Length: 362
Image (cartoon, rainbow, N blue to C red; front, side, top):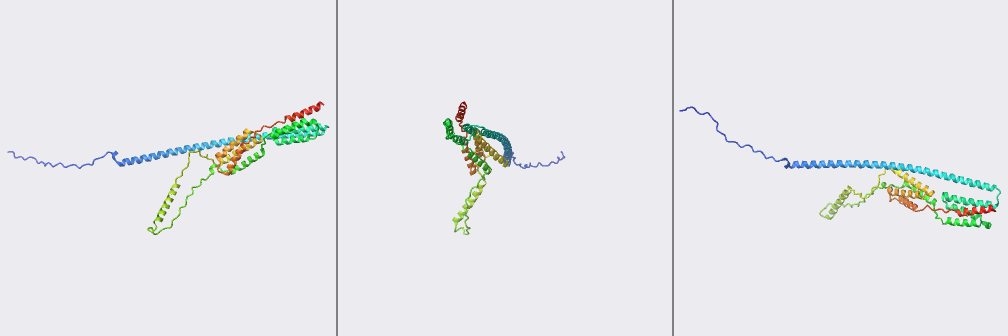
């Protein structure tokens, strides 16, 4: 009989259940993740739009500055060119004045020589008639002064009154030339020059188009209702008071937004310095037109007036009375044809030469 006892062994304990762990969901099912992602996308989109807008603004500003500098250089070049043209015209006018002075001196010298010489009365009279005809021709050729030519021929015809019959062909030729001169269209050069001068003096007082200050829209005042203490007895007044308050809020809200039409060309930006150059350039064009008027240069005269009128319409306030009056004056002056064909005095000159030739032949 085996007396050995079996070794001691612990009884088997029952297995305890492990704590149940929570079930993990994937991150893309977390609503906080999507909210953060949407917020990040909005911030990134806003940053990108702001950066693009700033870049476009910089490019537009640089482009406008470049255009402004280029326009200023072009205006300065035109002003220099205009000053050179004015100087050339003045030199030409000085040359014409010198020629006129020389002609007058020659006429005076000839008159003195003929007075000193022992010529017959008919010879002196014929010489005087020729001088009148020559003076009239010079007025027509150099200055286009029809009135002065008419006066010269009338003086010659007056000297031939009650003279011998041999002077009748010369008087007939003078009468024909006077008729042609009187039929010539009259151009009031002096009056047109004064009108141009009046426009030039008004340029400094004409407002530019950017000087217009937009008027604020007149707001209708809202009548303030008296305070009502008893709301039960005056419900209509309380309703009017609330309507007035809503109208005030609506007016304030409308003032925050400004709507402007951009479907038409905006006025160019003109600095004060550029405005001064613009006015001086406009004055220079009108001075060129005035000189062209005195020189009977129709092409330059009309082109300068048209260019000046375009500048008035483009840069100056069209609603100003001074601008409207100046544009009306320039349009009226541009419609006048100063290129009038001047008649010649060839018939009178030929009759005088023929009379002298007949006298010398006898």
